[in-house]
Length: 352
Image (cartoon, rainbow, N blue to C red; front, side, top):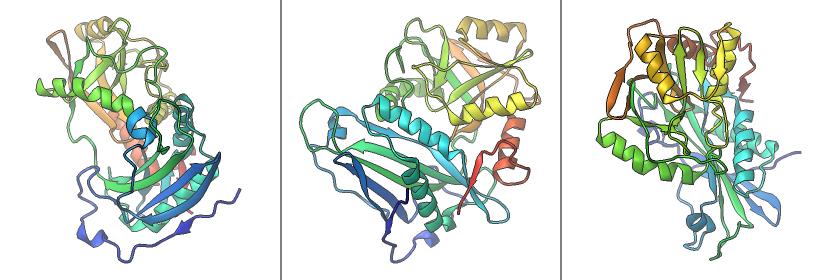
């Protein structure tokens, strides 16, 4: 299937206005954006235009009834100037899984990949090369019916824009184990990367930040006794025996970086266990000295260590002076992404 994309170039790039190697995450955007519309059961009018505001009706369905999903992914430029995407088909798979849960249409792979290729090729100069930096890419879809009434929309818009980024976190994290608020409930939309999940998480996250924490460490909605994920990332726990991470369910997001950590760790011969991890089990590991480290994983966060978790008002500090396995995993990710070592997992898709 050939995808025709109409391209309207900017008259003049604005890249010279910024130091793209040193920008605040999510504040600077490249010159162009991609759009395609879903009308009458068909994706149509694929185009790339100058990045800018879009006109929306006040009756827009997504604004009232929340049919909005998104993805986060990255493209990297190595020392040879070669550009590659990190596991883009995994992002498409998750986007379409979210779309199904939110009663939205499936996006064909041809449109997704052609949009990425043409947009990033056009704005390739915006990709930073500093280690730890990348071009962050935001694909998203939202309902566009002009209709007041609770029903799934019949029309949608899929868009992609990008921004040069440095590290999302530049310090170790302090997290508060959540005992009351719930991110996702069994049978809910917790496994979908939909806008409403993030909106609902903002209030408890704000409360935790007022207490001096960086993030909430969510627990299950039924009992608040089992770990799930943080506000922006999946979570891993390393003990003397194994690497543990909460098993996937309909209450937490299937992270692509999470999947990659598991694949790499198993390739190294590490024991990886996906299971329900109770907070009492975590505390016991800490008190007996079995707990070595905790870290979060995500496209924005990459891998960031947790130096402290708090539960019922008591804080549990981790030793950050040990040889951190997560640091070695992160270094291996960087080496693969930057082309310094062979991509034995076939994670990287080259920019054509």
